[in-house]
Image (cartoon, rainbow, N blue to C red; front, side, top):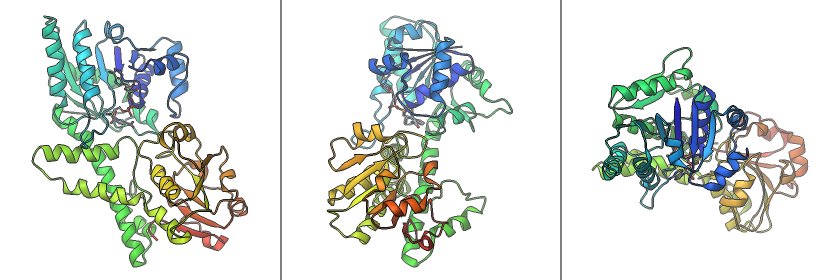
Length: 440
Ligand SMILES: NC(=O)c1ccc[n+]([C@@H]2O[C@H](COP(=O)([O-])OP(=O)(O)OC[C@H]3O[C@@H](n4cnc5c(N)ncnc54)[C@H](O)[C@@H]3O)[C@@H](O)[C@H]2O)c1
């Protein structure tokens, strides 16, 4: 099939590349000429395991091309995915300006019958808006071209995006025509070798499914963090409690790990947007508001532990940070808890030495740009030299089993603040460390 993917960011790049990998002819479009120029030179703007190799291979075999020219891309396409950002607007709602601007361009430029697929995470009712915008442009052209608008929310996880896309748990398709359902099924069939995992539904339900999924996952995280905070007050151990509740299959072990809170490009904005969608429709989403409040507070729990240990004024203290990305496997720092923790420490006069396997450039160039008193290192042990404590904020695999003797030798004092409870089962106290974790 010929496919256009509009927006070559995280979702657009991964989905376009995976569609090409199974034999489709894919054109990835972006409004950012520098990004497209780099992609055409083989420079991939994000880190995602396996992505670069797959892009290079599919560009070489001509299944994948990158361009800024939407008109060229649409010439032969049967399906056009909208995969542009839907960032948080000033009032907390999803900002649809990029989606609707793409819809307008599609209406102006489409040349043949087209299925337009909303892959961006969008509020319920967006497909109707996209449809109206395209129709208006077609009317202005006196064109009677046919088109469908489909909702196909994306569930990939950064850090495991390729695997998630190639072997999805499910593909949700919201449509209102048999033609669109059939085409979408044809497109996704190669991703289901063993059994069909399509979930078809009406368009509004598909739009809502994405928000409900992210809201549920965010709720689990805030739930366990709240339990962890109560555990600390009553002298219980959140990690033991986690194991105790996770054994119940109705609860399960995933997403109930106490830590520094959720971040990233999706949960924070999607929880907020869902609250807003509810409000606009006359419903107060109390649970969602609480989930967000618990998470906002959680980002400061580890900084508070540092203050309790070292005092309100951290002048003269240096802290060695392990992990900047909002989660392992990605260089994405959007809403990363590390940003909040580091700013809190800097505010109190501390100096920071930071290491992350992939996200140092993002920190330097965007999220912690301009902050004095941060030094970046390309060795995790180097950041510990002359530092007062190690502060672990992202659970990268390479942090799981470090050389604790070396950590102790490098640090001024053997203190670890573990924002991801990576070492909670290791009895670090018996190895001579002062060990601070979440929920104990
Ligand atoms: N990142 C994730 O893990 C993830 C997972 C599931 C769903 N989503 C959703 O997918 C959508 C995209 O997210 P992302 O993380 O890929 O965003 P992103 O910011 O990484 O990428 C968006 C891209 O769209 C481009 N763009 C903007 N306007 C354009 C236009 N008019 N024409 C062509 N390109 C244009 C931008 O230049 C950018 O490259 C969002 O709605 C997000 O909520 C993201």
